[in-house]
Amino acid sequence: MFQDREDQANIIELRGISQSYDGGKNWIIQDLDFLIEDKPGQGQFVVILGMSGSGKSTLLRYIAGLQEPTKGNVLVNGKPSSEAERVSMVFQQYSSLPWKTVLENVALGLEFQGVSKAERYEKAMELIKLVGLEGHENKYAQYPTLSGGQLQRVAIARSLLANPKILLMDEPFGALDVKTRLQMQDLLTSIWHRFQSTIVFVTHDISEAVYLADDIYILKSQPSRIVEHIDIDLPLTRNRTTKRDPQYISLVHQVEDKMVSVSEM
Image (cartoon, rainbow, N blue to C red):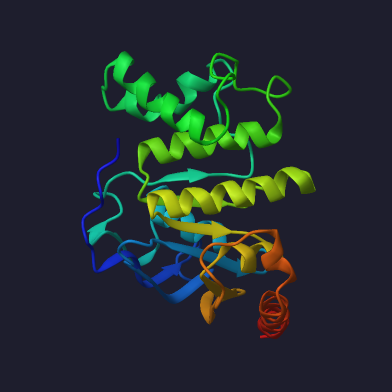
């Protein structure tokens, strides 16, 4: 269904990014550089942490092509984000169209591309099965017809079908209960390994960040820039027992200490 991605030196690169909304009197983000290199045959799971207002969501919007910085360049697979293949984004708020079915929502990106109905529905069903929504494809994508976790599965499936190579996620599990959140974390890691995707994930939950990531970047507050990079030295394949591993617990404490330090800058 999906072709292997071409080898690229850099998947995502932000060069000299600065953001001001008042003509340069105040800089929300200043001189920020951010690089995600390609890891062929593996992909990457990058988590961005930072205090509220540090620009985490703004970085995702740059990559998705939803916003342009005041200064600097945003490259996706070596091309300006505006010219690159579309990168989808999963938000905390449910983003499905409630007047369309699950199947129609997942296939939406291919519909915009002019793919025939039969082909886009066939491909959409593959993703619906993958995210555990088989049997719900003809239900309307709205609450309470579907649970919060199911609606986020719809959003993930839609994003994967549009572009399985890069997935941007802005606190997608923030509104979910604990059990559903844990299930969604494991679903996401399985998707990462299956598609060898580059996932860029924003969260406020440090334990979630350590469990999911192979790299964590921490932003300082305004003017925002990346001040910490933490390599998460855990096995790529993780499960609930990982959270009881002394190395995992140590990394959570390390990231907590870094976050406190950054908050005081």
